[in-house]
Length: 181
Image (tube, rainbow, N blue to C red; front, side, top):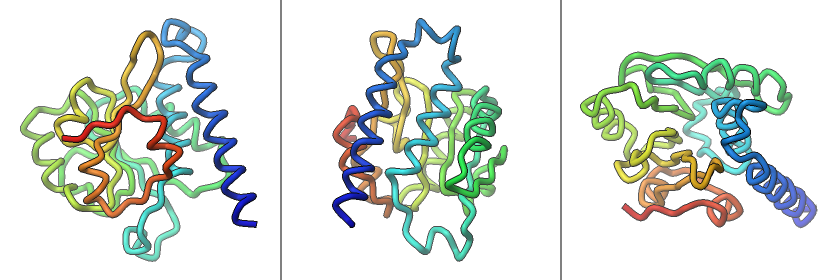
């Protein structure tokens, strides 16, 4: 049974990653970039395990968006179509509001000072920080979605992952651009 579950997850990840390579960003008129990235975030949740302590007895996954981004309505749309997770999507304006979040999407609209405070606050905590801004993974964001050769790809900061307490599937790691800073 365990083998079958792993096989199904492997096939799903393969299809997910393969389908991402079929939709270059120049085709985003049919599928806007923010909708594709929201789809990536939803799929990431299937391949990351949060420690029980991160849930605090709560079965609802909390996704926070810091800063202005077009990804919020796309996340709402994507998660509304999934039946596998209870999800709460909230906008936040300060570092203090991160408490209890499983996923934190960090917009490029926040200041460098705020980014530094956010990364200091989340360091060593089971919060999956995600952005879509060039260079943010090197600054300490766990996962960064980027466009490479007109395709949406993702980077993972392995150092941040190692201290976060999150367990990430090797299937996800093997298909990422690994950043070691």
